[in-house]
Length: 430
Ligand SMILES: CC(=O)N[C@H]1[C@@H](OP(=O)(O)OP(=O)(O)OC[C@H]2O[C@@H](n3ccc(=O)[nH]c3=O)[C@H](O)[C@@H]2O)O[C@H](CO)[C@@H](O)[C@@H]1O
Ligand SMILES: C=C(OP(=O)(O)O)C(=O)O
Image 1 (spheres, rainbow, N blue to C red):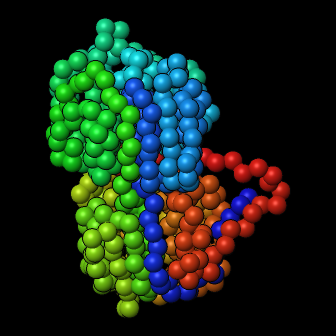
Image 2 (cartoon, protein in one colour):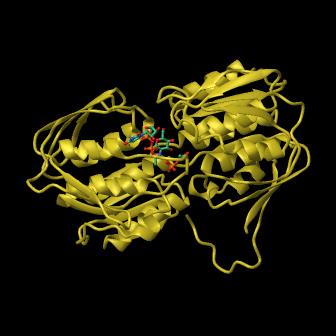
Image 3 (tube, rainbow, N blue to C red):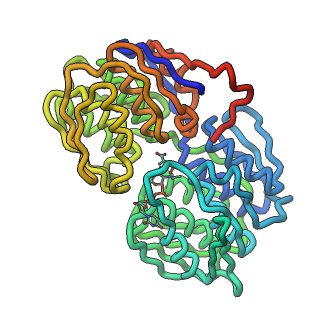
């Protein structure tokens, strides 16, 4: 099995450039099928989730080309199916956005239940409730394929989400932009990728207002046109490198970011005694002291992101005192990685959605597994901050969301390399 090998204890210093946002990219790529002409998407991250989304588009008949590693051109006109096949779609969460986009394009969709990080149950009832309100019927077959059909067309509706859901907000937007009349989504998610998708759709000719607030209003239109669009920087990749600076008493300038998207992450680092200086599109993170304990609660944006929870919990393992981390988005299922951290000497007790983290002087290197994307990158952070050698297995999860992580960390001074499994002829993503 391929693994990352990390000799810990190096101070990370220098500059790192952040790539485009995974969670924006996996929504914008399906949205392209709503267009009546080709689109060019720039600042695309080179990660396996994006490769898988592009593969699905090609499999459906779109003509796809890559002028360079971070740019994709997609001509959706040849697509003549409403079906997404299961194999690749099940390797990622964002494949469920093909439901919303296909409904907008052709009023029906047959798409597998999505994959993505395993936090226990990840229901999609709010997505289905939204589609129903817009005039759709749905069913699930034994093979895990979801069929959603709008027998009499799509009609704008007033939809209140029972919980703040990024996925449901985006999926409903994708359908409603091509519905007749006005749709209002109440209790909508406000994450930066929700806003980025709305901006992309509006550039194509849609009429989406209020994205970034908890009420989004969409006037349906008949046609959307092809555009050139650049994806926003990845909030979570940026936050992870900020934590790497703090974890190693380092000094890193994180470039190509939107500092406003990082406000909750910066605030927690400052509380821990870390210096964070914001530029126009940079943040510099410097740490020259032992971290202070702090309490963290994950919340929908603009609260502290759940996708940064494993990273900050890891950081708190080296802080002075006892910290409390409350996971309020994915209750229960997002602390599984704590067992891996314990192998490195972490002292953490988990009760339901609360982790109590007792700071220890040093973690020590050990063989550990990436249990999901952010849990995996948390193991990398632990490896960087500890004494000795850490081997991180199951790195395919990390590659879902981090472009070139080994080279980026090595360029900051980390002693990390990828050890390829000699027995593995072909590396399969996802
Ligand atoms: C591809 C993508 O963008 N993934 C992100 C998206 O996941 P995802 O879209 O799955 O997350 P949601 O915001 O929908 O989930 C929030 C909470 O609502 C629950 N829920 C959601 C929908 C639903 O129909 N019913 C329901 O009960 C979920 O189980 C969870 O407890 O937002 C999460 C929360 O910021 C992030 O961790 C993921 O990185
Ligand atoms: C949970 C995540 O991703 P996904 O929803 O794609 O599994 C994540 O990015 O941390």
